[in-house]
Every structure is written in C-alpha cells, then in structure tokens.
Image (cartoon, rainbow, N blue to C red; front, side, top):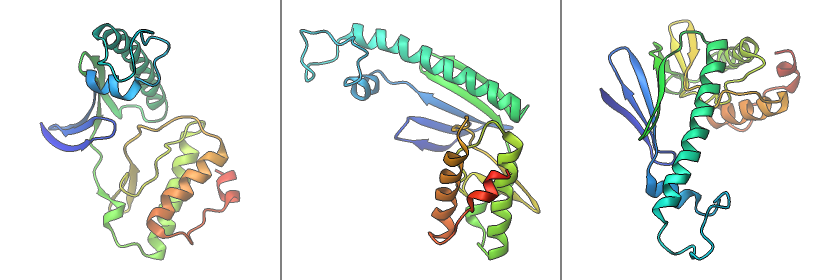
Length: 197
C-alpha cells in the first residue's frame, strides 16, 4: 500500500493498492473536539467553559453521532455511485478510526498535465457536458482538470466525493468556476449549452 495523498483539511488519506485506490477519512477525537465544540448539538455541559478541556463523555457521545452521520452519507454515496457508475466502488466500510472507500483504478493522465490548446479546451468542455448528461439527475460536482483523466482519445473522471443532486444553475456555476481555474476567467460555459445537457 503506497501513500498517494493526504488532505490535512478533512483528514483524508489516499493510498494506491495493487488494483485500486483506497480513500480513508480518519476520525480523531481531538479533531472532533476542536472542529465541533462550537456546534455542540446542545451537548456541551452548561458548567463548562469553552476553554475547558473537552469532557471524555462528550467526545464519546459526539463520536457516535458523527459516525452515524458519516455512515449514512457513505451509504447514500455508494447508492448514487452504483446508479451512475456500477462497479466503480469496489469496497467500503466504517471502522472505529474512520470510514473507507475503495475505487477502481482508472487509466490516464490528469488533463491538467497536458497542453491546453483551444481544441483540447473544447474536448474537455464536451466531455464535462456529456458527463453531466449521463449522470442526471446527479452531477459529479468537481470538474477540476486534476479529476479528468485522458487516455489516448478517451476521457474519464475520478474523485466522485462531491456527487449529488444540484440545480442546473449550481452545476453551471461550479463547472464554469472549475474550468476557469485552468482556462482563465474569459472562458465561459454558455448556460444554454448546459440547459440542453
């Protein structure tokens, strides 16, 4: 198992296994306390100041609440993915240290690593629009070129963590923002093109 990436913000680790990627979202008690002490669901003891150490019973209670929430989101994510990309998710589960998701390897080079010609920009846009059409009523939600893999004349998209249901305006705004981050602010995705998606 080879470490590929660690995201410090959401404590997500990505590993490369022999035939798949494994993503692990780690749950750390100190992180639970730090991140959620202001959103306590009414569980913070009234006789404790916010600067006091977090009581262990709070951590355990909140861990149960958070794990249940994560498991619900994981099951929903797997359900959606099985609708639009059957076979992409190979395994998933919940463990005391967090949740994990294993996905198949997708061949290709990230589009961000390739020369961005006008023709290539158009191919990327057409690929994204085709992807939006093929996954409706869901949408990928993260069309950064680091997620779009090019394998010869074929393209595919990975990192489906943000898949969900979005309005056409939300999809348009996010697609435009993601593509502009690589193609420049002058790159415009016409809303009418997306309406036909």
